[in-house]
Image 1: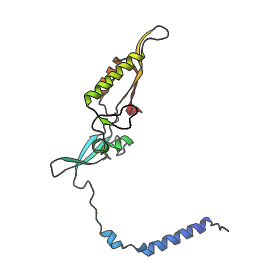
Image 2: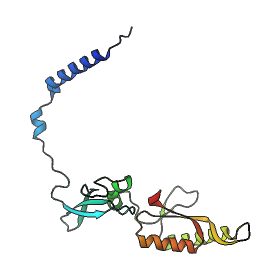
Image 3: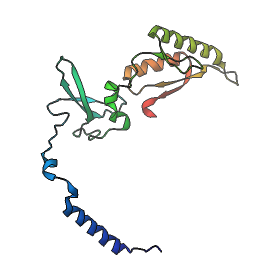
Image 4: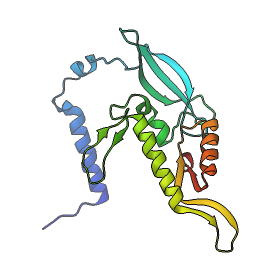
Length: 195
């Protein structure tokens, strides 16, 4: 038959158990544990202040770098700047992963293509990628371009292509991309930083 513990009995039992564990030392040699000294990864690193590239908020970042023996600069850590009046050291999920933007081992550095039905990616050149994108955009635009609406008004719009701008765009890149897409007649435009 199960016994029930009152709240007071539970707290007494918990306090007794904590006391026993505290006095027993759990078999650990605390002298050996306190003798271990670790150096911070950013100890002696150069501290540089920057701004997060992901949106227009302008959160401040601190980047820690160190020169490697071969003369290269190694990026060690990126974190929010606690002295910033904008973000007070906090970062959104995108800003918190800013280090991966620069040094991720999983970052794809070359164009990859996977043919329909294939399970394998293959490397292709930038020229091939740009040619494919241009060809598919033209085909989609030709197929989905609307010259007039149901009331006969001239609209000249492309309803078959959507464009999402990157949050790391500068203002000039965003302006240019929007002008190009509007020039093609796109009406479905979005900005990734707003999503």
